[in-house]
Length: 154
Image 1: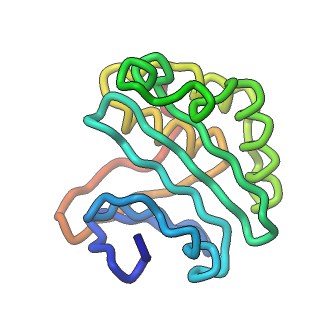
Image 2: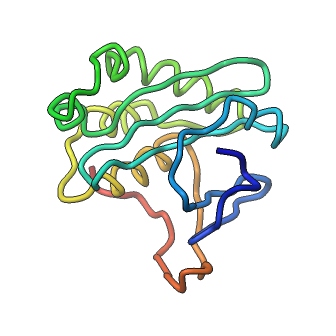
């Protein structure tokens, strides 16, 4: 996936950061950090049951994990891809701090161990909040409006 190949459905901006819900859904091309010249976090939600998350920065710092880990395991996602929540949280917090964010370590770990109830998309929003993002979503090409990213329940 390259940014230019995506059709935005919903988006939000916070300073230089932006969140895009895009179609088609595809794995990100490793060049996306070079293409944007900025840190990138990509989440892929599977059937609203779990989400994979990958992040990379311009200096090469990266991390990956899964939200709703037990559900991800039931779909066959390998344990090494899911990772240990404490280790993933530590790497994610370091990535967020380097990106100029203020992560909440407790909320971050909670988002990484929580199971979706009812939607994995809610865990993605909880993760973004735990990493330090404070997006407000606006109307996108799909006509959807969502409330701002306040402290989501995990």
